Image (cartoon, rainbow, N blue to C red; front, side, top):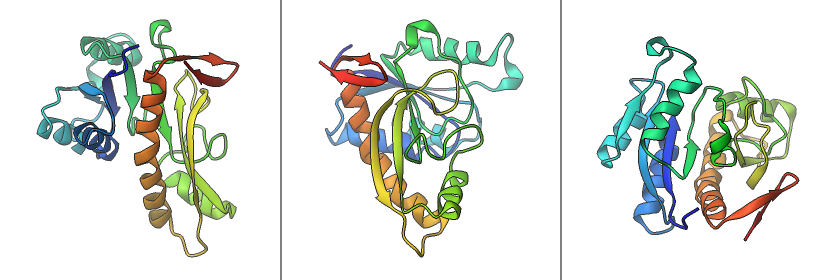
Length: 203
């Protein structure tokens, strides 16, 4: 893999994670390029963020595909010829083809394996953390596989859960951690390495 990887970004919503990557590339903290952005939501603000940054975009909705939805998404991804695919608030399970195994990264807003799985995304996670009474939360960047939040972990950043936290305040603290963790994970995999058991060992 090149040390300056070409990325394809998948998103479903506001695109804050995409914007963070755009900004980190612009300020030199992340040596990478974004070849294209794909959304399953036509009105996702992340599409506007991409257009402002001059990044090509595509919309792939379930209603307008023949065959499987995963195949349609991968057809769009492959047009951008990425080294890695970055899930940035992508809310659909995507089957990973063999040639992209260990090349698709996902961010989850908790310290996996805690508070992961189907239906656990966004504020659902932060509400569950607070309701459980956990004292620590955080974020996890992991390789995506064919199930929810179970791929090998690359990077985790922890944050405290405060007694007065609401899902909104905890989400803000976790997102700040995500802004550091995702570029770190991209740099890690771009530097080369291999999976030993479930641990990524860099070259």
